[in-house]
Image (tube, rainbow, N blue to C red):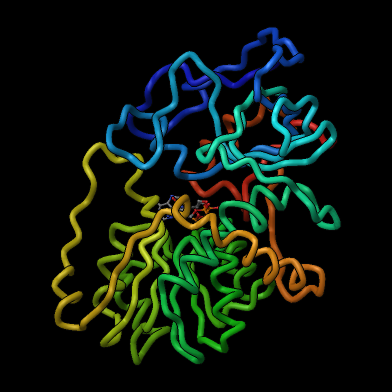
Length: 339
Ligand code: NDP
C-alpha cells in the first residue's frame, strides 16, 4: 500500500521534502464484527486547510496530522469491503480518506463518508464542485453573504476550487462580479470561461486600493474573502454601507510565522459591514439541497468547472505544496487510480 507520510510538523512554506512516499502492507479483509469500510482510493483532493493540519494546533476545528502517518483528506473511493450496512462492496463514495492506495476508515460524522449516487459526471467532481469546495462556495455565498440581485461582488483567489463557483453563482443573480487571481492565464479564465465581468492580476497591482476603485467606483456590496492580509485591508476601504464579507479563508497568512495586521477594521463600524467567518463542516446538512441545485446546472452546461488533475500518488506532495504558490489552475486533484 503506497502512502504519503507527513515526516514532521511544518513551519513556513510547506515543501515536498516535508512528506515522503512509503510502502506498507494492509490486510484487505474486515475483522468479524467490525464496522470499518475498506476503500480503494481513486481521487484525492488538495485543499488549503490541510496546511493548518501540518502544524501542531490546539482548539482548531480539525485535528493536526500525525507525523509518521499518512496524510488524510477528502477523496473519492470505491468500497472494496464493508462492515457498515450503509455501504456495499462496489459503491462509490467520497469523504475523509488517506493519502494512500487503500484505506480502512470508520464512517463517523467526522469522516463524512457520502455515497455517490449520480455517476453521470466526472467522478473527480466529488473532490470539487460536488464535494467540500462546492459546498463552501454555495454556503458562503447564499447563506453568509445574503446576496441580492444586481449587487457588486468581489472574489479573491477567484479562479480556484471555491472562487470560480462563487463568481458563477453571483452571475446567476445578475450581480456585477470581479475576481482577482495571480496570473494572466487565470485572469483570462475568469473573464472568458467563468463569466466574471472583470478580473485582475493582484500581483501586478502596486496599489490594491486603486485597483479596487477602478473596478468598483461605487463600492463593493459583497466580498468573498479567500486570501486575507493586504487584500482584506484594501477591500475594507472600498466596501459600501451595509456591505457583507464572507470570511472563507485567508491563504496569504497560512505560511507566516506571524500573521499580518489588518489596519482598516474600523470601517466595519463606520460602514455597518457584517463580516462573518464560517467553517463548511458545520453545513453538511445542506448537501442534498445543494446537489439538487447544482447537478442539473452541470448537466445543462449552465455551470462549468475547471480542474487541475495530476496523475499518481507520488505527485501528490508537489500538488499540495503548489496551492501556496498558485501553481494550480482550478481545483487541484490527484488521480490515484481511474477506477
Ligand atoms: P484554490 O483552488 O483557490 O487554491 C489556492 C489558491 O490561492 C492558489 O491557486 C493561489 O491562486 C491562491 N494563493 C496562494 N497563496 C496566496 C497568497 N499569498 N495571496 C493570495 N492568493 C494566494 O483553493 P480553494 O478554492 O480550495 O480555497 C480558497 C480559500 O477558501 C482558501 O483560503 C481556503 O482555506 C478557503 N476554504 C475555506 C473553507 C471553509 O470552510 N471556511 C472550506 C474550503 C476552502 P493565485 O494564483 O490566484 O494566487
